[in-house]
Amino acid sequence: MIVLVAALLLAQADAGTAQRVRITVRAIAASNDGPEAAGMDPKLAPIAPHLPQLFRNYKLLKEQSFDLDWKAPAEMELPGSRSLQIIPRDLGADGMIKVHLELLGEHPAHTRKLHTDYSIARGGTILVGGLRVDPQDPKQGTLLIAVTQAVEK
Image 1 (cartoon, rainbow, N blue to C red):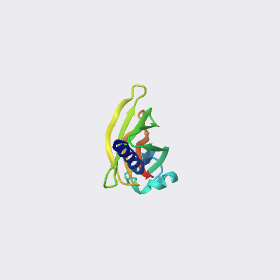
Image 2: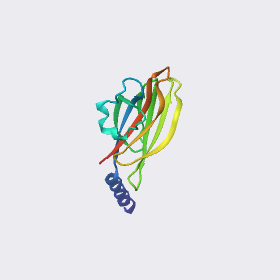
Image 3: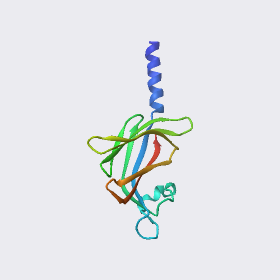
Image 4: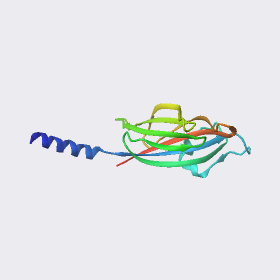
């Protein structure tokens, strides 16, 4: 009986703290080619303050949002026959979300290009980048990947 009560209390505690995390991934082409005036895709307005001023032009290539349980993977196809796998690991006491990112490329072999963990502030955005949008055409610009998170209750 005591074991049953303890199990019920643990289940209730888990249900009370269970949270999902909403992660939005944006694939962005960044370049210095084109007109002298800076060009910012209006669809990037929510994360514009996080974009580095290293480039004059930013264009959203793809955006996808995921509502994930902790440690549940999600995958998004990226330009250049690549994909990004993201796994939310845990929510730290400081409110930071720890995520694991893997950038895979060159289908079907899926050669690993990036394999690392990041911490994202609640409601924050991290940027990962440096590869070409199209490995065969440098004029397509640099691929930036913006990962934004928000905890759902």
